[in-house]
Length: 121
Image 1 (cartoon, rainbow, N blue to C red):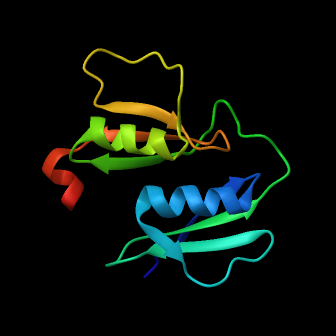
Image 2 (cartoon, rainbow, N blue to C red):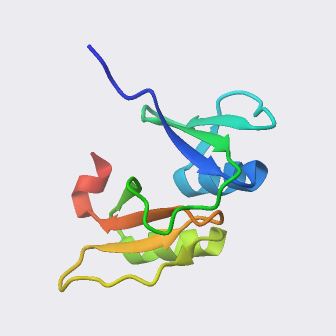
Image 3 (cartoon, rainbow, N blue to C red):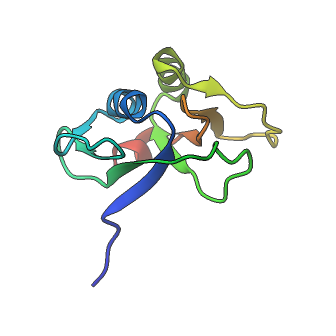
C-alpha cells in the first residue's frame, strides 16, 4: 500500500509561509521548523501534511501542480485567505466556474473551490 505523506510546497520566506499556511489551513508545525524546512499538520483530526521547503527560485506563473482547497462558503474563505495575505490571480474563468484562483504570499497559486457539503468530507 502507498499513500501521500506530505505535499511539498516551495517557498522563499519560510517563517511567513509557516504563518500563512498554519492560519489558512488550521495547521501547526509538526516540530520546530529548520531554517529551510517545516512540516505542518492538521491541528485536529487527520489530513495530509504540508511540507514547506525554502527555495531560491520565484514561483512559476504557470505551475503544473497546485492545491484545491474545498470550502463550504467559498466567498467567506477566499476573503479570510486574502486577509491573511493571499492575492487574487488574474485568471480567465470559464462560465460557471466553481473556483477562485489565489496566490499565497510567495506567489504560489491555489484554488478555493465551492464544494458545499463535499468540503466536510
